[in-house]
Image (cartoon, rainbow, N blue to C red; front, side):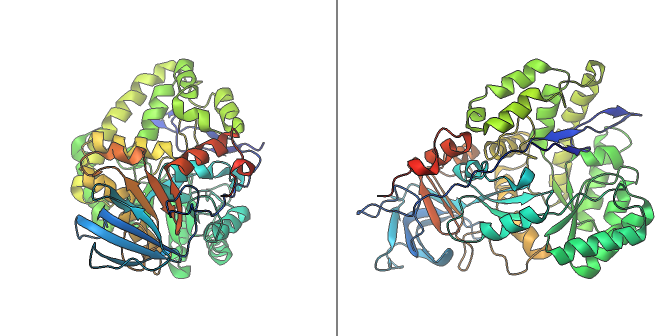
Length: 471
């Protein structure tokens, strides 16, 4: 098991600024493949990759500005949305697998976790994302193995979300000069990574060269704010996205002051910089700070039983937060409390938001953690529908603007990738409905509720792919 070190997602007091070392556990891979089988009646009782599906009599939230479309038929053909229209107007294609919505169920786009770490490109956690309706993830530290995994995630038979990936972290350990910055960015772009991830300090000259080269070669710069530079450097040099709202505390604010937060939010909105708040993970950090009992509680939360044993062991052995000085805990709690007005200010100013969790940091279970993030954003005062946009359509827009102009996901629209989530009610009225999907479609492969339960069992090793008998 390899341990990688990450400095910026937790917090250690250093002259009033906080940073922490985050240890990711990594383990052996388990490839999971499920059969493409439907029963004679056309109801999806196991994973299916039928060329054509018809979702009949659903209330559709397309997340494209059209509002709610009632009693719709959505036809999926070869992994993409082919047609959408009112029931009775759109015909069900002959031979299509029919999924009935009965006029009461809702169809929404698949969810996106825009900040995950798939250490060693491991695949055993991937079914957990699908089981929770997460059909796309942004992996924010990668290598050649992740590029290969990304390509597989677009192909048939892949049991997991569609992957976008950054390359190796960029910081002053590998970039010491403008020449280094140009070389590293060009190399990552030519290798085919989707993003360059800033993680650590950089000299001003190197940071300017890094962002300028990224624009020249057409790759997006995302990540932390270089903590040795003012936040204005991020905005002036065109870093596309900032992960963690806490980065603004370290680099953009002199105090935990709502007025300063509002001014910074307006500057960020004017620059068009995206923010992935990871609000739930900061709460997770605050809970565990100098508290072994809090970590013990995380180990027995119901979601944790689905984790691979290697991750559970790494959590159990971790002191990344629990080993922090107790006298710092009050300050950490103050910082977390300030996240609420900070994220509110971002939303009110029109900063474009994505949803991400930094899973599988201790306490953050893949898939499940995204629902914690949605709940945390809603509790912070972000309008429920805006939270839903952040988890769906915004991610598609981010990718089209910064990675692939042809990518169409995060919406239910003709030509969009068929990533769909069936829920038993309107998530705009109750986001918690997304926690219990009745079915999930990823790239045109359909999993009903019973098959989602199998996916949960695969990651922990309680079930294996061999136990899924074709019918």
